[in-house]
Every structure is written in structure tokens, then in C-alpha cells.
Length: 242
Ligand code: ADP
Image 1 (spheres, rainbow, N blue to C red):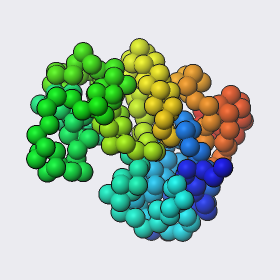
Image 2 (image 1 turned 30 degrees about the horizontal axis):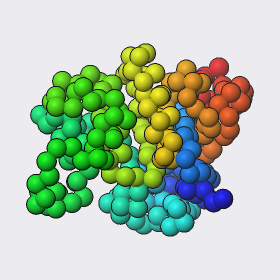
Image 3 (image 1 turned 90 degrees about the vertical axis):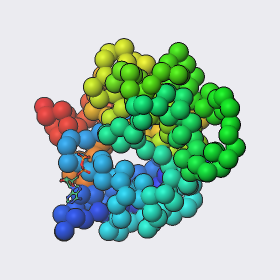
């Protein structure tokens, strides 16, 4: 079976500096893949290339058999790839459900307006349940805790129906309970999506990761089962600083 996302011999140079220097990465449909690596390893650049924000210098990126080379961001979104950013995209004055509704319709806002739909659509209702914010559906997003806001952002991606979700440090700044809830949420989402998560929290990885890819200086240093990756002396040296 071919992978949903296939990256071959990827190179990204900024003024001659190789931020990505020959990365090969294969992520299968339905995988929950974790991407780790020290600061400057190239994680964000890799995600930027997948989402069309950064153009690769050389190499190929294939998603569901389609080349992503040179595709603009909105085209990539249309192909079924969604990502979260470290900066929030939530509208604080709108309710939780309105934020989800807006995200669900953001590619066809006029149609949504013309339809003058009432109540919660099935897609939004399901996402609300998945992210566990039913009780806060009508509350303004501005009152959400940091964790709840992150879940809402994940919900805002899900309602757009992506096949691949790219999440950048989803548990950063979360409480222990919130981290646990996020781990469960990711596991749930991975049942019908492919998910790539950039994450640094080792305890979180131990609990929720299966396959981990370690980037270092623009290349894949190690890849495999979380326990094996953590025990690898190269990983301990570059990533854990031991
Ligand atoms: P990570 O997300 O793993 O911390 P990045 O992908 O952000 O790493 O960065 C990888 C390397 O590429 C870093 O050394 C960074 O300074 C450099 N870099 C990233 N984006 C640019 C850019 N637009 N111009 C120049 N250098 C960049």
C-alpha cells in the first residue's frame, strides 16, 4: 500500500543554508506520526513545504498520489491538508459553535449566507462532540481556557474535512489534565484522519506516540517506535542533550 504522504530527497535552502537537507518521509493513511527534534532541526520548514507555504529547492512531495510541488496554500487545503499555527485563529467574540461553523464554511461563505441555515450542522455537531466542548457551544470563544481554545482550533480544522492534519505543538502550555485530554483527542482523530504532530513533550510522546521521526540539522536522524527512538544514543545526544 502506498503512503498518503511521500517525501523524497527534499531539500530547502535559504540563501544557501540548507534548512532541509535530503529528507525522506513516508506517512501512511491513518497514522498518528510524531515529529521531534531540537530547535532549528527543520520541523517547521518541513510542515511549511507540505502546506505550500515554502517552495522546496529540490525533491518531491506527493500527497494521495498527487504532487504538491509548486502548489499554493489554498490549493493544498483543497486537496485535504489542514494545519494549526502557533498563533490563534479563533474569533473571541464569536461562540464556540460559530467559530466551528465559520471554519466549516470558510471556503464557501456566500453559499452559507444564502442558505441561512439554522441550528448546528451535522459536521459541526460531530466536531463539537469530538473536541468535547458541547457544554460551551454557545459561550464566546474568548472565555475558553488555553487548552479548550487549542481543541477548538483542532475542531475548526476537522470541520473542513481534511485527510491529513498537521499540528504544531498542540499541548504546549497545557495543564496535565489538558495534555491527557489532548492525547485522547488525537487518538480519536487518528481513527479517521492521518495526523502529523510536532511535539517536544517526552512524557506525552511516551503515552500517545507510536512512530516518531527525529529531525536534526535538516535530516531524519532516527525513525521508529517511540521506545526505540528514546533509547537511541544519537537521539539522547542531540535531542535530550545527554
Ligand atoms: P524547527 O521548526 O525545527 O525549530 P525551522 O524549520 O524553523 O526549525 O528552521 C530550520 C532552520 O532554518 C533554522 O536554522 C532556521 O533559522 C532556518 N530558517 C527557517 N526559515 C528560514 C527563512 N525563511 N530564512 C532563513 N532561514 C530560515
